[in-house]
Length: 195
Image (cartoon, rainbow, N blue to C red):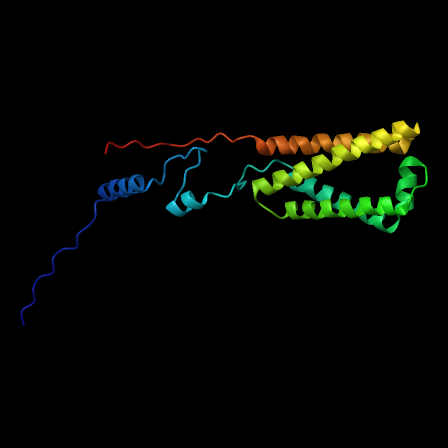
């Protein structure tokens, strides 16, 4: 039996393979920046769009802030639902109908569910909407409380404390919202090859 000698295995030149890969990606339109500054790794992600995720750019204390807000809103909502007259009397030192306080508690409980959802997501857009919802709620609550206090001519210590805490919460929430809305500067190494 005669055996033919095996031809030596052909090795691919890594540089040629890399150039070929870059040419293929260029033809497909993958790997370059799009209008939003995103670099897509595949044609599928380019077609479907990337989900905006934080990665390592999450602001310090954001999760703790959302947790504190969720716990606070849930607690106040449950107090408003179970003990409506005590909550109103604590702030305004007056009596009111229980139905309005319970409606407030139900609305606040709904917002707290949004806060709990924002705590467990990694998507930037959802967290931004969560913070915007909280900021809107705090703004409306501050305006309604202020107008009510002016109309009634009351300025108790608890009402002033409530107004100051609403302003503080609003400022912190808006700072987180602003920080999330900033565009991050991307540093990228571009390799230019002559094709």
